[in-house]
Length: 242
Image (cartoon, rainbow, N blue to C red; front, side):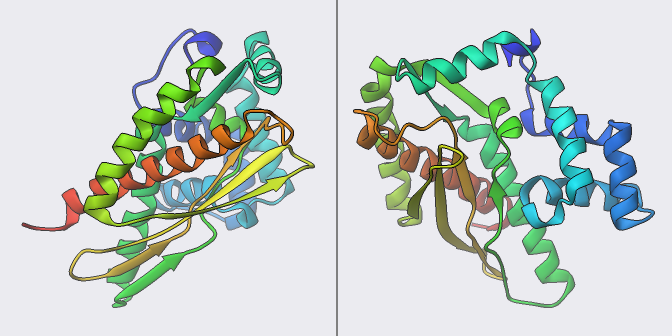
């Protein structure tokens, strides 16, 4: 963000959602898709469109792409893509920023449960799949540092596993998009409602024949777990009383 925008927003989630909400083309496509909405409803649908792919029709996709191009402008983005493909750089997603999004979905599910007098709610189609969105959360590092970063993540994840239990992460590869698809599976119970969430995280510019493939996959799994554990921590701090 500092290199592409000349600034580094404190709240990346709000930065992205605000960019969408202030775009006239996006607002018009939402109106066409869902009709007249209150401010609260507009906020809700903007968040859900960002994380649930089947809600996006072609017009919404075009509007989102237009906004994301503005947020990811500059030659440096293409340079990073090239260097990542060449195994000279790699990256992980900012755990704090994306965990805010996961936490927001847990809150949305909890609210839905309470309003509908349910004790169990789930979302198994929650996705972080837009490249233009994910770029905002990307932390890039020299490939030779991958071992040190994996070591640091292992320590953090191991500590949280002992507190919250294991999070299962499944991995698949999409050769068309050159993307790793990482799906996490976890649940939370706050004493009132039981929530199950399966967030999907896409990692782009992944070379399946890379010599560092196994290290990269380990880092991806650890990164996904770290994001989800942070979201769980925020959830329990907010909704579970001592």
